Image (cartoon, rainbow, N blue to C red; front, side, top):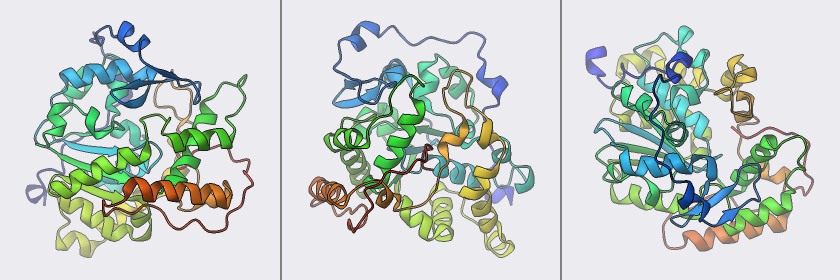
Length: 356
């Protein structure tokens, strides 16, 4: 079977000891350029700067600038891309499990002991830490992740010699997840971000990695131009039919499930391994951290793992406003996002975790 699946037997997670680079190459000094960019502090403690038309978290800006100049994609690279809080953690787990299914038994899989973000590295942060050599040292085929809008990608990725998988989500649920996540990152001495303020900033596109509508639309258009290179997924559709979605992912990735695998239940094993309940229950995703200086534990990436939670957080008027913006921004594209804004509870619950 390994001979039939050449793309499914190489990726290895970035072990903690592999993260300690003996002689990291620090990104070039972009401090003066960054300090001159427009500043937004509404999502504090993470400040954002407007870079090439998009609001980008200040801590990763040096890495992004360095990455734009120096990153070289390989033809067999696979890029897992998304707007923040759109299902990134789940997509990372699924793609990694699919590609490594012949390498590791499911009862001893790396995802049982490491967070999906350890298995599929976040390029922006790796470059910002001056550890680009970690990515260079990864065996092919690599699975890599970034939240960058399409125009900001390195040219070697935009040339689409490689493959891109993009996942989107109802903007209303994206906002709720962003709000929870940002409030968890705030220092104890800082007041939580009022939901109404987060709502207004989100509507204006003043969010980390820019406007959700511009972000999604760029990748949607690329998927329409080159469907053999860009696979566009919706979080809600994966939730509704995970079996079909996993089969589709494997086919696009170049390592489809064989009839024998389907008969033996391998597809279901992948789904079970990557399920929200399974990942959330793991000790590494309860107390572990991606790295010592990161302010949040891994449980920050797991809350409900469902669609439609926006109904518990915003008024009907808010929901209708977001739906109107979505319709206007995507008009004529052929893309639809989210459901119709129906009666919703205006009360904000006390849960302080982020959506899956």
